[in-house]
Amino acid sequence: MAVESANSNSDDRMVTGGELVVRALEKKGVKYIFTLSGGHIAPIYQHLMDSDIKLVDTRHEQAAVFMADAYARLTGEVGVALVTAGPGFTNALTGIANAKMAGSPVLLISGRIGLRMEERLDLQEIAQREVIDPIVKWSKLVTSPARIPEFIDIAMKTAISSSPGPTFIDLPVDVQGETVPLSSVKFLDSPFPLRAGGDPKSIAEAAKIIEKSERPIVIAGSGAVFSNADKDVLGFVEATGIPIFTLSMGRGIVPEDHPLSFGPAVIIRPGAAGSAITRADCIILLGTRINLYTMYGALFPPNAKIIHVNIDPVEIGRNRDVSVGIMGDVGVVSDQLKRALKGKVKADRFSSWVEELKKEEEFSFDSVKGDITSDKVPIHPQRLMKEIDEFLGKQGIVTADGGDTQTWIGMTRRSFGARRFLESGMFGCLGVGIPFAVAAKLLNPKEKVICATGDGSLGFNFMEINTAMRFKLPIVIVVSNDLGWGMIRHSQSLKFGPGKNIATELGDIDYHKMVEAMGGYAERVTKPEEIKPALKRAFDSGKVSLINVMTDPDIISPGSYALATIAASGY
Image (cartoon, rainbow, N blue to C red):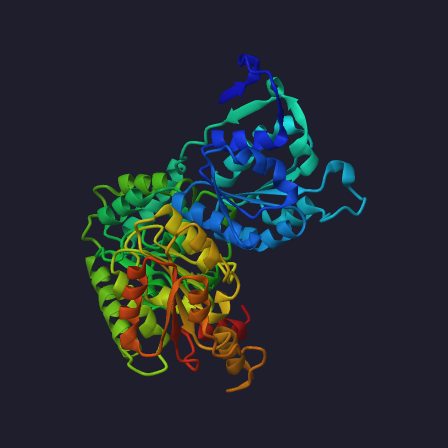
């Protein structure tokens, strides 16, 4: 543990809490803070003026946290958001809840009324820590400025270690302004724990199950990405020849053009997932949870052997009993399993099973070829998403937003590397698309970044287009405009009867003209053959752009059908 203290420093001046926040974040290597200004964080802002940390100031606190979340997902580091008290804090809550469900390491620092003003009905007074405690891994109300660097060290270490997630520091404005001798302050830089492997006995048990299996599959999730296990997971599947599927941030951890990679383990998506998941006799879960995506484990065959690898023991066997649970880092455990199976399972052992899945995949994609190539007007949403996928090819980053729209792009977009496709996650939160895209472009300025969003979700953080423009981040927003809340409209029709809808219509709005008025590039697209040329013009413009694509409002996505089926089944 490295400790910097003024006890060994001749500089014994007085420092404020606000300065200590900045110095502590600098020491932790923070490069960006996503924020919206306010009076209750002014003492911190004062010292950020002379800092190398770059402020990305947004139009809504929710978007600031979404950007910090995207930063965390894209880098594997802690994303930091800074908001003001009261409504600034409450506006940030949805973003924190989304990060919690996605397992994303985010530190939220919020200003707060002064300690001396409690219970006096001060401006923007609310019991902040009590509100946020249930949705963060750790929180602290700071009462002494001298402790600020210690608490920031704990918050960041807690956010990124074990199963990642958000943390919170509640920082009263008077504590930010209070001064203390620098000699009383400890700047901690605790190392993160080393990557821990699995118990050797459990590894041996898992290896025996795999050795005896005939139809094994791997499902890799977000934990595989946050542990930077790309090479380890690839090495395991190549050494054993086991086909791999992915979920959540795990998408692309083995590129989808690899002969053993079959894309997302989502049965509504064209591909082999449905056949593989329901027929497998051995399912190896690497850093993923048993949740809605697999019908809480009900999709797994009753007699299938399940090997569950997770850094968080609480997640092992959630919703479904497993044969072997292995607590450990996905990368380390993958390598342990590979070594345990060396000489016992050859790379061609499951080749006939892989060939079966390839045929299933080909048949599945043939069944939706008509939708993908449809020339109908209004445009079929899957045709729109296929045009985006083909335009980008193996390059670019896609952020997904909306109900049906997120379903369509998730079904269609291929992932050729980790951290290339961002969606809200299990919280099902709308409004992530543009903030995620802004963060993605900030971190990858040479990449093409597309936000695929519905017209409903577009409205949540529309003004972050201004943020993208101010920071000269030319993202391209593609709106699947079906004139309303498509997923809810279709869910109502499936439940109440055809055409029976309420509070789902938004109307035909010229979103492209709004972006033009703000100084961006934009156009309206009504025919499928116009999509790729419009995308090219948008990227060639070098501006923040919006393509307003008119899609068929009557087409129901497989996601809507699936949710209706789940609701009817009682899950």
